[in-house]
Image (cartoon, rainbow, N blue to C red):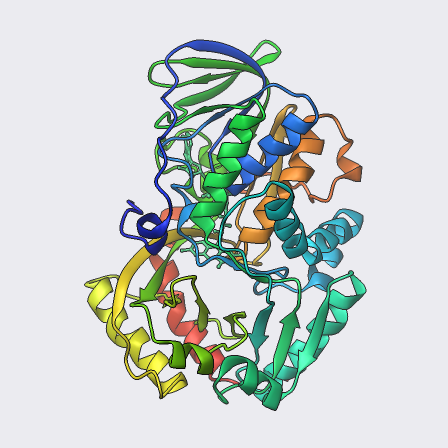
Length: 429
Ligand SMILES: Cc1cc2nc3c(=O)[nH]c(=O)nc-3n(C[C@H](O)[C@H](O)[C@H](O)COP(=O)(O)OP(=O)(O)OC[C@H]3O[C@@H](n4cnc5c(N)ncnc54)[C@H](O)[C@@H]3O)c2cc1C
């Protein structure tokens, strides 16, 4: 549960946490959860002149926002824009356009808010691991271009030059993508929320969330927030601190643990041969190969395991060997950091947006692609919370549908990696 062993916790400038809530207060909008979604929504609301109060159960960035790989990606994983539009119609089209523009949106916020987070907008590349997947890349280039995405198709030679390895067949390059230090970004957002008059309380888990007459009441251990509206920005960590906060929402995703790893700082000569132009890369496999540099010459990668036993030692071996095969010059590197986090998954690989009662908004299920998305959603949720009609929002709202036999699904989910590996080795049309 801790993220103190992450690379980001160890290299990011320390900050003094905000004090917990110890009073009763009234606010226009209460936000539960201090990650990208909650803080981005807060910033947009503050610009609209709203009074905003945020409570975070642990420290700012404790959830996925402070422990992800920092790859800024303007696409979804495992679902295509056409499928989103087919399923959700006009709202789906608005959402797909939001995704296509999401990486640019993030880098613009970083610039406008003057946040030092090691941001590099050098592009995100998705190399195809089979010729059939390259056909998929071509279709993706067409689809995302139509939605306004700044994308192009690379051939095998261009892919090899970009990555420093000839193991892929070409792929989809998103020019607006890149990478960041996610913990520095989430800290920067929080500092700006505070500067602009937002109230922030850390180490303050919401224990209950109830409508009392026309107001929302959020109880914490030593305080109470009374709000006109609420953004539940707890995403895949919704049941982490209080199981009954929103149990239906918690059971509408299957939470999956994924591991991140950072090598020791590598030498300049290696850095010039691997990802020489500093792109972020995640390939077309279900058992994803992904890597990027950080600002201190560490290569950041990771993976998932079917069996979590002795995870750190086994990952160092398995992922080290993968890197060795991909970049023989590198050999099997030494890893200084291994950490993990929770990703919310759904069977159709689509995010879920909820408005279960008037004045209450939430989302979950990034399916592994939520850095650029959650920051961009801040604008959409701020509009939702200040009265923009649902049929104008870029968020396709659905009823909350918990998975039946959720605990069995959660238990079985890591085993699906075996299926993904099998599918990765099969060609697609
Ligand atoms: C290991 C990992 C790697 C990833 N890598 C990438 C990547 O490279 N690129 C990409 O696009 N996406 C990636 N993602 C996904 C991305 O990080 C998330 O989609 C995004 O950060 C979600 O932000 P959020 O603010 O919605 O949720 P979170 O950051 O999870 O924030 C939710 C917050 O709610 C708080 N909370 C929970 N319960 C309560 C309560 N009762 N009271 C108060 N607060 C509460 C939690 O402590 C948490 O801080 C990754 C995710 C993980 C876990």
